[in-house]
Image 1 (cartoon, rainbow, N blue to C red):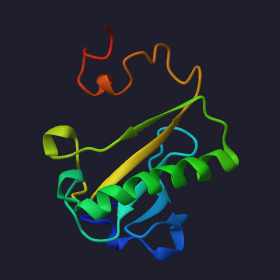
Image 2: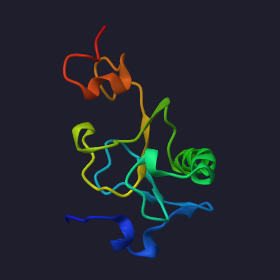
Image 3: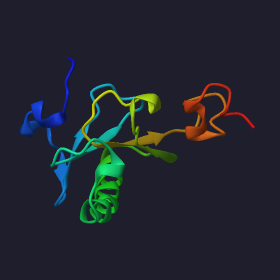
Length: 123
C-alpha cells in the first residue's frame, strides 16, 4: 500500500497515544515489536514539529518501549527518524521508529544507525 500520510490508517490499529502522537506496529517491521510513533497533526518530519510536540515525543518513546516489553524482551533499541527524501523518508508525515534489537539479529551490530550510509557502519 502506498500512502502519502498516516491519516489513511484506521484508528483501530492504534496501540497507544499521547497528547500529540499515536503508536502503531510497523507494517514492515524489521524486528519483532517494531513500533511507529506518528504525529496526530500533519508535520513533514522532526524539524517541523513544534516545541510542545518535541517535548511530548519523549513520552511517546517511553510508551513504545513499555508496549514492546509487554510481549518482547529486546536486548537494545534503535530509535530513528528519516527526515527528507535523501535520508530515505517516503511518507512525509512525521514518524519515529522504535526498533527493538536482539543479540544475534545481525552479525556485527556495532555502528548501529551508521549503517544507513553504505560502508560507514563499521569503524
